Image (tube, rainbow, N blue to C red; front, side, top):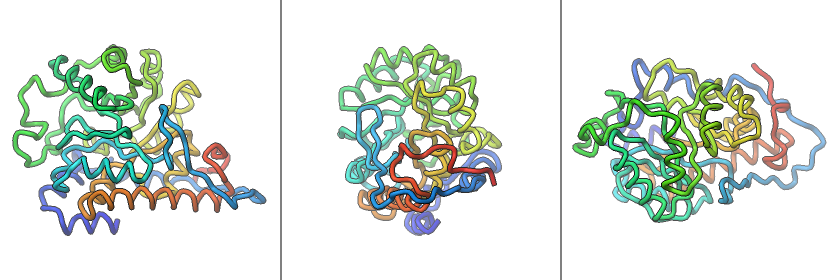
Amino acid sequence: MDLEERARAVLPPAVFEYYRGGAGAGISRDEATAAWRDWRFLPRLFQDVSRVSTEISLFGTTLAAPVLAGPTALHTLAHPEGEVATARGVAAAGSVLVHSARAGVPVESDRWWFQAYVLRDRSLTEAQVRDAADRGARAVVLTADAPYVHRSAIPEAGAAAPGNRPPEWRQDPALGVDAIAWLAGISGLPVLVKGVLRPADALAAVAAGAAGVIVSNHGGRQLDRAVSSAHALRPVVEAVGARIPVLVDGGIRDGADVLTALALGARAVLLGRPVLWALATDGAQGVRDLLDACRESLADTMAQAGLATVADINASVLVAR
């Protein structure tokens, strides 16, 4: 919260409200963080936690912690270097950036995934995805929960704003699961489906060839009163089992939240708005500091709970409040 307030002090009010904004009355946005506090830890005693490792491997990339920078649009509104600075901070922290299709500037890095919308004109999507693969993206993240851009989510950013684009550049509201195999075919990359809240949709994504799913309600920016990611996570994990990794975003703010998500079955988490606040306040260094702090907080929470590695984390360390 301190980081958010620091960002509020340096960002133009319209930009801050765009980043912070939620759909409708903001119920889903506001519930997100509190929902992770609906569980309590059951620490294990007599465990050797003299060394704690938060490291994982995900789609061929080693991460210092199971914490990624999630896709958020128009970083150039927060910092002159935009996503270039974000990517630099993410790489320095040993993480991965999910680069938004609505980014302010492209990035060149070996630590990024491309977030895609399937547009009404699929040739535009194809060009974006092929370009991302050529520039070194390691995965494609298909955002499936935004058939239309919610009007309250449109910034005052001119022609680049999603709602100000011509119709062919807007999302296809008839998106089907066939898009998963299509994106995999044109990119040659694993495709994750983002926006999953229902177990049945997770299973449909698996059947259609998804390499992973991301439990998310779009930061509360699309459908207000959508269930929180924290409450949707476990049923999705139970549905897909060990077939594919399940990631999650929405309201995660510290290592205790990360540990809760991992204990509920997530392979990794994504941070959204906090990355923007960090970028706005201190550029690339701010992004690195945020991810480093989250990793350190996770390591400390794991040690206190008697968990030496991420592989040691399971549902036995949690109870419902």
